[in-house]
Image 1 (cartoon, rainbow, N blue to C red):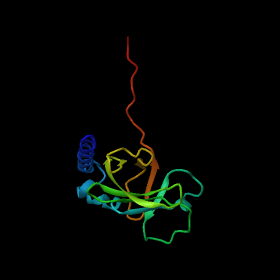
Image 2 (cartoon, rainbow, N blue to C red; image 1 turned 180 degrees about the vertical axis):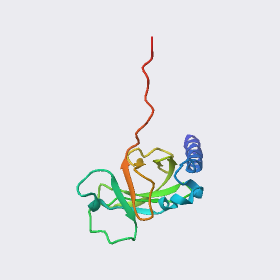
Image 3 (cartoon, rainbow, N blue to C red; image 1 turned 30 degrees about the horizontal axis):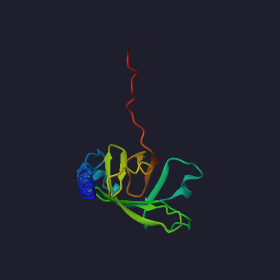
Image 4 (cartoon, one colour; image 1 turned 45 degrees about the vertical axis):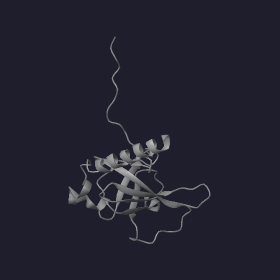
Length: 151
């Protein structure tokens, strides 16, 4: 009974998160066609970063032939809140895994199929994704700061 309850809660959470994907301000759910470029399959083009760690540069899958690499991160996003990402497997059997996402402004939050935040994959867009490039940095910087309580 507990497993069924947890599954239902997880499914409701995924439904909610999927519905929230339209809160982006950068073109969620087709509401802003000027940035519909975000909704595609992206491949990390780390060679273009010239040794810099950030921002990370992603190019559309199939847009070029990427040099061989042991691991190359990939993301796929659709306008309905569904996504997938390349899972870095410890035994080098990397695979694409399904997820859902919420895009709020320039912040993108990814969640697994149980509704758990994949915080290590959450990222901030440096600028709106273009037709042929997405620049991002991993991590979400919270603009709100806590004020010390006065006594």
